[in-house]
Image (cartoon, rainbow, N blue to C red; front, side):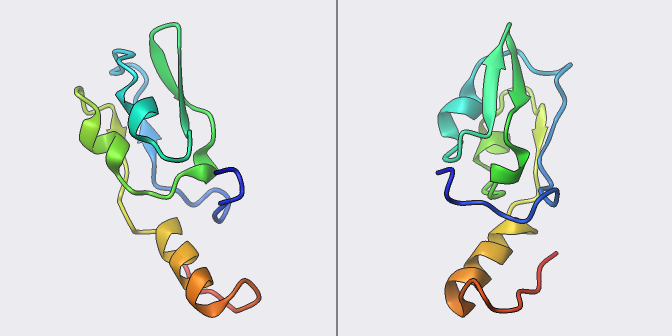
Length: 92
């Protein structure tokens, strides 16, 4: 999935590490390996890989993750598929 990149620094994904219990649900459901769990805490290891699908937030049992699905980069990638990579893309 490293070939799928979005606009840098626009993802709405946020993780409150103090709330995280290290269950690993975010790692299991994320299709782009955005998260890692080390020493019983999740961390965001690839923020720009986030497609804002929201699976991590929906599956986090302690609501440590927030994201606004489809607001930013998902829109960008869909427009790129439709218009092509060289096209002017409006996003965010």
